[in-house]
Image: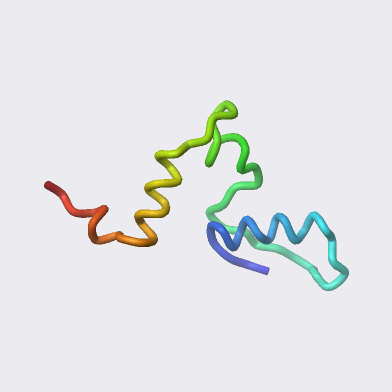
Length: 67
Protein backbone atom coordinates (compact mmCIF):
# COMPACT_ATOMS: atom_id res chain seq x y z
CA UNK A 1 0.00 0.00 0.00
CA UNK A 2 1.14 3.57 -0.60
CA UNK A 3 -0.42 6.97 -0.30
CA UNK A 4 -0.31 10.47 1.11
CA UNK A 5 -2.02 12.04 4.12
CA UNK A 6 -5.32 10.29 4.98
CA UNK A 7 -4.54 7.37 2.68
CA UNK A 8 -1.23 7.02 4.50
CA UNK A 9 -3.05 6.93 7.80
CA UNK A 10 -5.32 4.14 6.63
CA UNK A 11 -2.22 2.10 5.87
CA UNK A 12 -1.13 2.30 9.50
CA UNK A 13 -4.58 1.12 10.56
CA UNK A 14 -4.54 -1.76 8.07
CA UNK A 15 -1.09 -2.86 9.19
CA UNK A 16 -2.31 -3.25 12.79
CA UNK A 17 -4.57 -6.09 11.65
CA UNK A 18 -1.59 -7.76 9.88
CA UNK A 19 -3.53 -9.27 6.96
CA UNK A 20 -1.55 -12.08 5.34
CA UNK A 21 -1.52 -10.40 1.89
CA UNK A 22 -0.24 -7.05 3.15
CA UNK A 23 3.47 -7.17 2.43
CA UNK A 24 4.51 -3.53 2.83
CA UNK A 25 3.19 -0.03 3.47
CA UNK A 26 4.62 3.31 2.35
CA UNK A 27 2.71 6.09 4.12
CA UNK A 28 3.82 9.58 3.03
CA UNK A 29 3.19 12.90 4.79
CA UNK A 30 1.00 11.43 7.49
CA UNK A 31 1.16 10.67 11.17
CA UNK A 32 1.00 7.48 13.16
CA UNK A 33 -0.57 9.15 16.20
CA UNK A 34 -3.60 11.40 15.63
CA UNK A 35 -4.06 12.03 19.33
CA UNK A 36 -0.84 13.99 19.79
CA UNK A 37 0.85 16.48 17.53
CA UNK A 38 -1.59 16.77 14.66
CA UNK A 39 -5.33 16.81 15.25
CA UNK A 40 -4.76 17.03 19.00
CA UNK A 41 -2.17 18.97 21.04
CA UNK A 42 -1.82 17.99 24.68
CA UNK A 43 -5.23 16.30 24.53
CA UNK A 44 -7.00 19.38 23.08
CA UNK A 45 -8.73 19.01 19.71
CA UNK A 46 -7.22 21.40 17.13
CA UNK A 47 -10.34 22.94 15.60
CA UNK A 48 -8.30 25.48 13.61
CA UNK A 49 -6.30 22.71 11.92
CA UNK A 50 -9.42 20.77 10.99
CA UNK A 51 -11.29 23.84 9.70
CA UNK A 52 -8.37 24.83 7.48
CA UNK A 53 -8.09 21.26 6.21
CA UNK A 54 -11.82 21.17 5.37
CA UNK A 55 -11.73 24.60 3.71
CA UNK A 56 -8.73 23.61 1.58
CA UNK A 57 -10.74 20.64 0.34
CA UNK A 58 -14.02 22.47 -0.23
CA UNK A 59 -13.09 26.03 -1.15
CA UNK A 60 -9.35 26.41 -1.81
CA UNK A 61 -9.77 29.51 -3.99
CA UNK A 62 -11.70 31.31 -1.27
CA UNK A 63 -9.23 30.33 1.44
CA UNK A 64 -6.19 31.43 -0.56
CA UNK A 65 -7.54 34.87 -1.50
CA UNK A 66 -5.64 37.73 0.06
CA UNK A 67 -7.47 40.89 1.15
